[in-house]
Image (tube, rainbow, N blue to C red):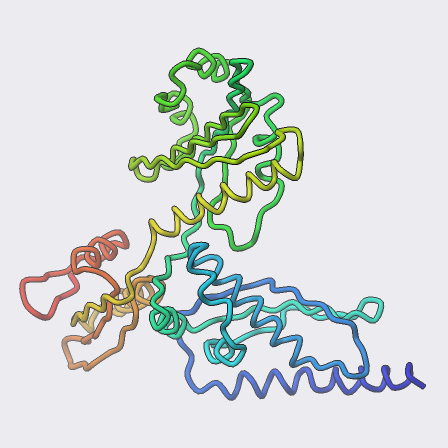
Length: 358
């Protein structure tokens, strides 16, 4: 009897899948071009008599939201939004799509893609006095060197468990991709010769081989009492030093090694997020006019405005036979706006109050 009910419920469920999708998407009255897209959100739940697909989707919204938050907020600020209510999250969902759903052994599996309205996300965070970061992914050359202070030895590749396990676990929300160096005898000898001055050594000869702008050198000093980690983070030639200590660590213990790795990754991710932080309290209002004759330039300009994270909003305020006038709200200074646009091959005549796209 129960099995028959399940089969009947499955048929009804499949019938309503398409209907519910139509209701959601066609009830959207405005589509925003700027959104945070979070894909491949996987949820599973036992398929029982009281099964409710909406509850599963709600779980997906929450999971997607916290994955987004993990990408745009540093670890300290993430704790400030832990108590957000489901209705608040749903209010910031712009759209969603069901990528895949299936039943395996009476377990329902769902894969979602969720788009969050960027402006609403920023407004919510600003209300909580939190400044987000631009979720920019970046590659860092990562060189972990273990310094055994008792044996006066350096472990670079062989027997270096930090090196061996660093890239084993990666979370979807992580922005940094760590490029580990390849084993090179010349590099090993170069580093070992600098044992006594390792903290002052900049590793330039090794870094230059990889043609990466940014790097992290992690010096892991171990002795009987503790493990001390000195991290040399270089971003756009700016160098920052971070120091951490870990007590009662066994460098042969896999779980303790993973704990060190997780802590260091949080520190590095936080630094990168703080480097790309947006001050959403700054709302620079700009009026820009573009000649109507250049349709391709207009299209490309609007595309860049839509894709630039520091653009809070933009609208067409008016147009005439010669120009289209845009009202742009930018989270930054005029000079930074000009630099951002110049990086995308757009330059402006700024001599008058209304700027002209050249």
